[in-house]
Image 1: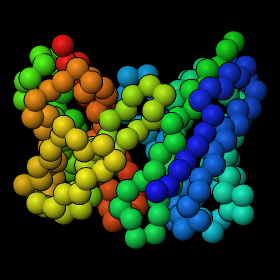
Image 2 (image 1 turned 180 degrees about the vertical axis):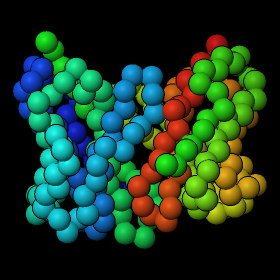
Image 3 (image 1 turned 45 degrees about the vertical axis):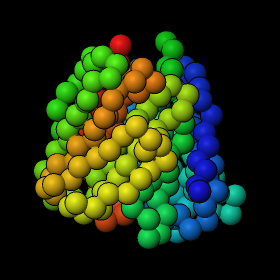
Length: 111
Length: 111
């Protein structure tokens, strides 16, 4: 089976950059995703990257993929209080319908 | 935008009751999923379906069953609810093996 791991907690000061890290084990992954879950809500797709890309930027979000090390990161620039949430890393595998999720990183933004 | 609707936001049931959780998606997606989310454990896949009347077990199917009579609707059934099934239940849908779209979740409490 696939294993996706991420650290459980991150505390960051408002205005700083946040970096959330994720590692995965399956080398046949096709897409890697970042989802955001605000308190009491479902998961919202933030961004995703195809496995043959190294980087993707979308406004304040930058995704970096190191396929050799099977390491994915999400950088949030100028972190705001509204970025406080749980962030999930997930991967999809070729010819598989399912996504494998990490346990989620709880990001707390302090003033 | 894809909409995935879960019928209840909060449910309180008694031990031994039969519980139905309903999920409807409006984008003609082939795949539908049921996950449960528990603190520190992330998302765990209960069942998924890749077509009408088709279902496959996920990682934790024990104590659950599912029904997919129509493409847009995927139901999760707890035949005899137990206290260890108290959890947040998340439904999702996807087209082929692409990104998942999630509903808002159902917080189920079994007393």
